[in-house]
Length: 177
Image (tube, one colour):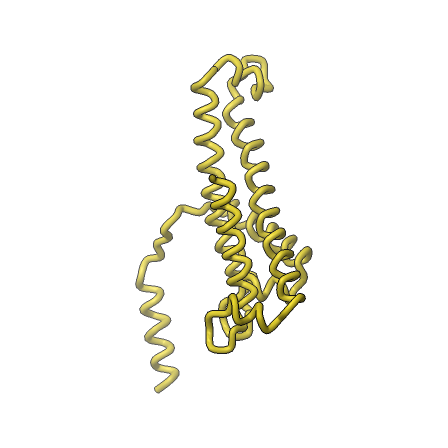
């Protein structure tokens, strides 16, 4: 009976068309994967799992990280395009002179978007790493108080991830003020 149920669910999943809320290109997934591998190496495996893992044994951390950052990178690209178009509209000649590298400066928008995107990605990576370091220090100071403050599930083992998420959101709010 269990096997029949699994087969039915699998067939139903195949019948439903996959629709993503944000159009994420394949290059974003590759970039997010590289970013998450580097982040895992920098943060350490346990910290990385605590930050991004959502299931009981935290083995889904890498997938959750890649998914989150693929969407983030899509948003970063959109923001970079908006910023560059606004800068171009303000002074087209100066914009072409600043970013254009070919003889007529027609590649200025692409160069601007690439540069702005790199800067925004680096800033986002730094925010997460800094938040994780802050939370790690706070947890090291008093682990039980840390778990009580941030933990939301029955055993409070999700405290580290909740702390990192909250810290990043707070830093974004402070940066916008």
